[in-house]
Amino acid sequence: MKENRIWMLALLAILGVVCSGALAFVNVKIDPVIRQNESVRSKRIVLNLFEVTYDPLDPAAVEKAYTQRIGENEVNGLPCYTEKRSGRKAVRLGGSGFQGPIQVLMALDGDTVSAFRVVSQTETPGLGSRITEEGFQKSFVGKKVGQGIKMVKGGMAGKSEFDAITGATETSRALERILNAGIASYFGSPGSDGGSGE
Image (cartoon, rainbow, N blue to C red; front, side, top):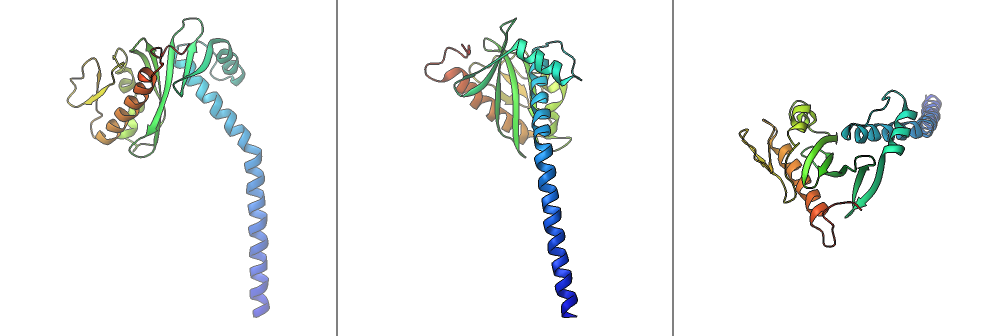
């Protein structure tokens, strides 16, 4: 009986080592693919923000369009992008949402939002996750954000305000904090040239 128990424990230990080794091997093999896919996805979002035409199903075409049309730099520690032909600029902002990190891209014409995209979020499905809805994202276009932006309720958002998502006040507040922290850094840091990115 004791020998059977030892044999079973040894077998379990061997199986554990084999399975762990197999998982590690698979992870090493697929990690570069996952990173490449994430890079292509991120570049697609930037290209779409600037309305650059490309073949979205061809990763090589995405890379080529991105290299030809998009410049990258930093403004006051924030990742920024410039569409080379038009000179349009965008900034990536991020921080803690209600459930987890939120990342957004905001294209700017001076201090006016010309395009807005939620890049990633882990908010509650059907509630906070509604920040990814097209209508909500488009509601930022035309907003003046140089002095910050304020969340309001009731559908009466002004030029420097946005409407909170019904049932997702905490996510909306978190987004307000993320945007204002990023805007303050982009426009307000000493030595800033108004966020020109040059």
